[in-house]
Image (cartoon, rainbow, N blue to C red; front, side):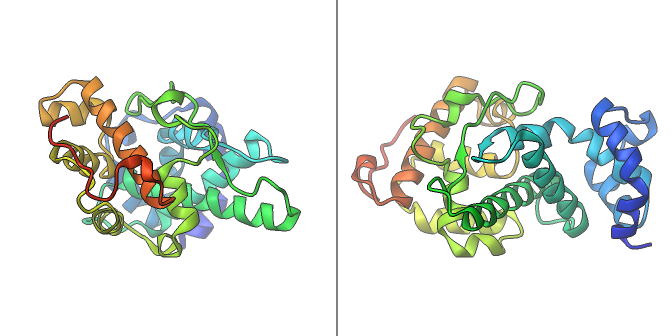
Length: 250
């Protein structure tokens, strides 16, 4: 049975579980990749469980954006479409499902923003990342101040998707890593490079800190420096100190 048909069969069940986050223990014990494979094979139960498992993640991604004329439910719907597409299109072995889902959800929201804005001819035609606290997701500890140091500008992730047409064709973290290496050559310290690699692979702040033997605060500070440098790179700002402004240490 095609996954599209399974989506129709699972819609009501997914909606209930999406709200209650109820997942049968035997399915909850399976990995994301195992549940995705089952959903792709036509298992409506696995599909609804994936939506329940990622409920907070989906809502947190929608909460990160503001668009004039749209409400939170509209953004959640777009995020759910992106998440569904990530289940449909995921291929194992190249990157963790969570990283792929993040790319698909963000891409779907940005595309919806662009369509909505062009239709309305609104003066605010970019999604402004608010990056509200992701308090419901234990693996994602970013807060408003983690990302939005200048509310006039989108986050690096959004800026890449909006301003680089190649980003629309990215399907895995390898594409993102290649782009970052090419765009930020010489700008990052060794610590920043290692933190960035783990971050785009989907590791949480705590997991990155554990792998690198650093504190969570050190990881957070490194990511803030990376974001500032990436924004400076995207917008050709001199504030980052030039393409070769990396300072050893961190």
